[in-house]
Image 1: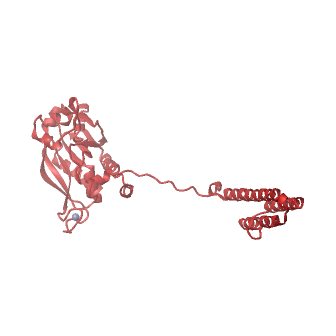
Image 2 (image 1 turned 90 degrees about the vertical axis):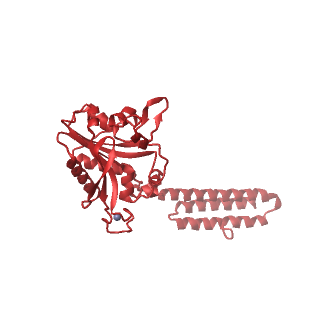
Image 3 (image 1 turned 90 degrees about the horizontal axis):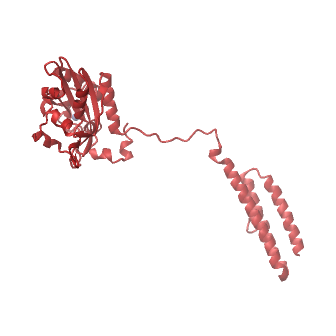
Length: 343
Ligand SMILES: [Zn+2]
């Protein structure tokens, strides 16, 4: 009985291998599986049914033979299935187009900074950058903030422990001093970078923020040059129709000084519910003025011979005004849902 069963199993094995070799589609593979492993009519089940006819002494051996055959069929089918899947896997098709990689973009702050730099470079300005850890002298004294002058209070400062003379610069203006001390006029620079103040973070303040500073010194420079320059910049950056408004202001290092507003680029003052200008029609965007004669003298430039103008703006402020960013802190949260909209 067992010998007979053995022969039949051997025959079934040869038949199975022959058919497996000629399988050409997933459907044929499934049919082969059905023919050998189906619970009701599969070849393995038929062999198992025959076990009942075996004499008890032969049953264990016959059972083992059938099980070995079943395992053989299962393994061969699994191997054929794996080979079929790997042969059709996408990575093996070199003719497919490459999958798309996400592309990064500039952070809004960096983007605005570069666009401001571009406009001034087209106007012939050089980019000059300087240290963020600055000497008191460059940050305050030479810019006409004498020691104990109340104007220093407005720029509450981080000093470096153990170095009374060293601080995190409170504005980018120290670069005016550094540049004037190192270069004789005429000079035209914009100086972008980080500045730091001891402000508690809220919707419009941050202990670290970004500024762009501009300085021009030459013979015969007067206020109309400042106006013309800022008009050219604002029209290029905010739109050709913006109108500028100069209001008297105060900075220790410029005299006279002016705060500059632009007409609202969204509503031009015609919408009392405007979300950008809140209905006022004007947007405060920068501070400016003629370089104070004392600052020129501090930088070894004769104010009788040379004059100049300077201006500065906060990049976060520009972002909030131009793109309607309601809270400055959003710019530092690294939330790609926000940052991915810009740049
Ligand atoms: Zn408006």
